[in-house]
Figure 1 (spheres, rainbow, N blue to C red):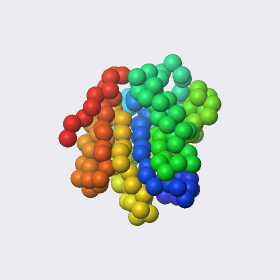
Figure 2: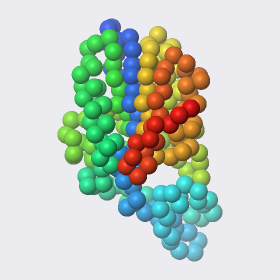
Figure 3: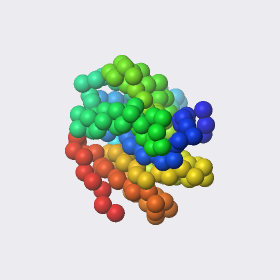
Length: 208
């Protein structure tokens, strides 16, 4: 496994890649039922935070975070409009093997543990031809910088191997991710970036 946490199978015929990149929580699956528990080991006090509260929370010395509730993912929490696009992307990935063009379906999550996502996808879809990547984000960090950085490095690696990426579709619910990834179109002008914000189940094209 390389630094991108994915393995890409190349054939002598492979010349181009397209990518559909999906966030997981609140993009593919609703995450409002996942509390984050923060315990102060000095006082023994524990507080419960929502995902959005955690994004702006500043930890104090002695505090530890418990993300165990994220290990339980239920199929009824799927966000159907995005989920249907995800399934269509999986079909494209299956059908794009052994051709000049390869289609990648990628789940790019801020979770540090990807095992619950892997188990969930295999449970509901059985065979899942996609790549699942977890990027560990600390409280208060800019998630978008991490995600755009991951995409930038992968794009640069593909281009260094003379592989073209004509189009990337990116789906996410967070503004910082949307903004940071949209900037990549300036660095990779040969690639068409189609950025989509997911807001309470609605898919909204992002203009830039």
